[in-house]
Length: 117
Image 1 (cartoon, rainbow, N blue to C red):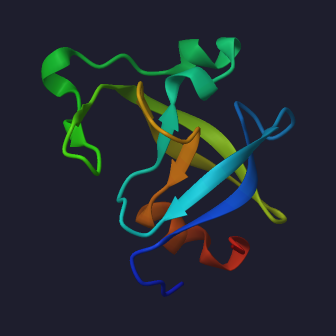
Image 2: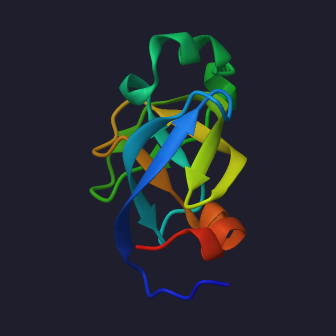
């Protein structure tokens, strides 16, 4: 287990629909966030059909650090490469996010040995 205090770190990681077509992103690893988030406009156009559309009543209700509500879409599974490890990771699509990709505590716990801030 990777132990941080509540901080965030920036790393470079690659994401894609499969493990052969990955794109590099600046990713924030944030120990205060539970789920993994990806900003909708960070998704390549051919990735958008992979987003599971959630009904309004099924959408997760999230708030940012300023307590403003974040509009969310559905989940999408993308391949994530950090270091030599490539794994499928579920992300929640968020419309208004200040960074393209945010890895939360779930991914930190699962991939601690491959994430080097």
